[in-house]
Image 1 (cartoon, rainbow, N blue to C red):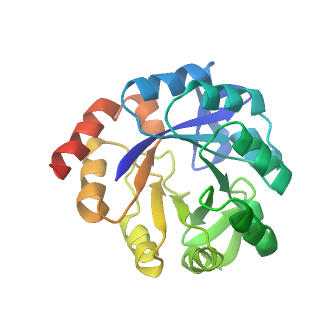
Image 2: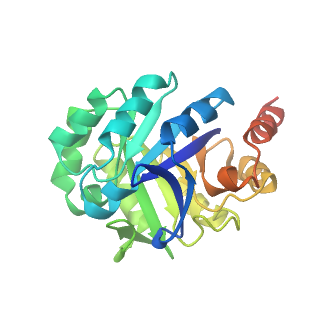
Amino acid sequence: MILIPAVDIKDSQCVRLYQGREDKLTVFSQDPLERAIHWQSLGAERLHVVDLDGAFEGILKNEPIIRDIAETLSIPVQVGGGIRDIPRLKMVLDMGVSHVILGTKAFEDQDFLMEAAQTFPDKIIVGIDAQDGFVATHGWKTVTQTKSVEFAKKVEQVGIKKIIVTDISLDGTLRGPNINGLKEILKSVQISVIASGGIGKLEHIRELNSELGEELEGVILGRSLYVGSVDFEEALKCIEKSGS
């Protein structure tokens, strides 16, 4: 299990949301690139970047900043937010990012998802955002009637090899991850799973690593890093010690 720092971009700034709500936004840096470089310098093996403007508006909005991050960093960068057609997907990959994260469009259009999986094998991650176990779309504004577990199975069937599972009710709360929900997903699919949402202290990372560390590909860290409730270098040591 690796630790993946998040850089969420809105209005060209590095921000964090609380439970995905636009009205619960905190700006942590005016320079997302500087934050990206910082996490790499501390030992991050991968970076998670989200264009929040793109997620809410349905079209990538912070392309220049994302391009700068992908070109500057030497570690893999995965990017999501407003990528909802094949030409834009290709454009983002051409920036040098390692993976593109698809959310709303992947859920609403299975033909698009199949085309993306076939055209860019091993480059697509599907983000499954869950509210009380049901898939949420359009920047988490719309909660569907489809269970996240069932959608995960469909994603696996079309050939996608990685998913990110986010519990919206916990995202940004620092209250801890939804371990039971993750276990349910992990039992249902054989593809790689990255967890997101709720990490607030080192003990949460230790617990997640102890319970699911051998099954999870990684965990995304956001607000906890920015408010200082988790020290990234200490978190890395926790993972290293458990694996030794």
